[in-house]
Length: 389
Image 1 (cartoon, helix red, strand yellow):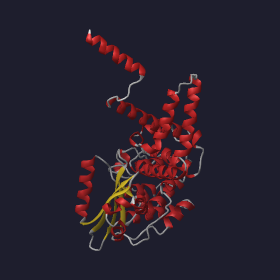
Image 2 (cartoon, helix red, strand yellow):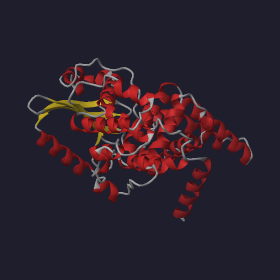
Image 3 (cartoon, rainbow, N blue to C red):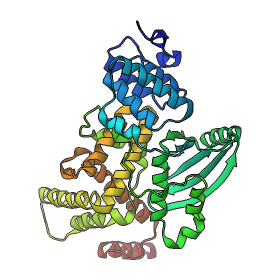
C-alpha cells in the first residue's frame, strides 16, 4: 500500500512552472532542481515532490537540502527521505556524509546577494534567539579588498522580512538562502584578506561574529555546489557562459591584467616587420602565459572560489545549466586541469584582456596629448603655417 502522502497532488505552483510528476523520474527530479531557488518557489513543496519520485537523484537532492535546512523545512526534507527509504531508495554515500556533518548551531541561517560591478556583495548571517527575535550580522564583502563593513542588529521576524524586501526592491537584486557554513567561511576568509590598515574601519569582526556563532572561524570549507551536482558529470563549460551578466561585469584587478595588455601593445608597436601569422603567434604565447599565471597559485584559488559562489547563486536563482558550467570551470581549477585547452577559459581571459585594452583606449582618447609623434608634430606645424597665410 502506498504511503498516504504519495497520493497528494503536487504543489500547483510547481506544476505551473513546468513540473510534471508523471515524467520520467530523472527528468522530474531535474526539473525540481531547476525550480529550486526561484522566486515564489517553496523549498518545502520541492521536498514533498521529491519524496514522491522513486529515483536516486531525488534522494541525492534531498540529502543536499537537509544539510542546509533548519526547522520546518528540515522536518519536511527528512519526511521525504524516509518515504524514499521505505521504497528502498537511499541518497549517495557522499550526500549522506555531507548531511551528517555537524553543520551548525540550531537556528543559524544565512543569505547572500550577487556581487555588483565592483565585486561587492551582501552577506547576512543570522541566529534565531529565544522568543523568536533574530540576531543578524550584516556585512559587505569585496572580491578584491576583503571585508568592507560589518555590524550586528537584533530584529523581530517582521523587521527582518521588511528589511529583506526593502533591500531587494531598492537594489534590484535577489537575496538567496544559503548554507550558513558557507556564509561564515566567506566572511572569515574576507576578514583574513582585509588589509591591516582598514580592519579598524570594519569594527571588531570576530567579536561581532561571536554574537552569532561560537564555532571556531573556519579556514577551509568544502563548497556545497559540488554536492549539488554529485549525481551529474561536470563537462567542459560552454564559452557562452561569458555572456551571463555576472561574467560580463566581472573584472579582474587591473594590476593582474595590465602586464599582459602592455606586452600585447608592445608586440603590436614593434619596429621589426613581422607577418600577421607571427603577430598572432606572439599574442597566443602571451595569452597562454596569462592563462597559466592568472589561473594558477593564489590568484587561481581566489578565482575558483568566486566561480563556486557564482555557480551556487545561479543554481539558487533557477539557472541550472549555467550553474553546472560554472561549477565545472571551478572544478577544473580545483583539480589542476589544463586551462590552456579550455575554450571557456581562453574566451574569458581574452575578454578580460580586451576589456582593459578598450578602457585604456577610451582614457587615451579623453586625455590631452602631451607628447606628439614626429608625424603629428609635422602636421601641426603645417596647419599653423596655413593659418598664418
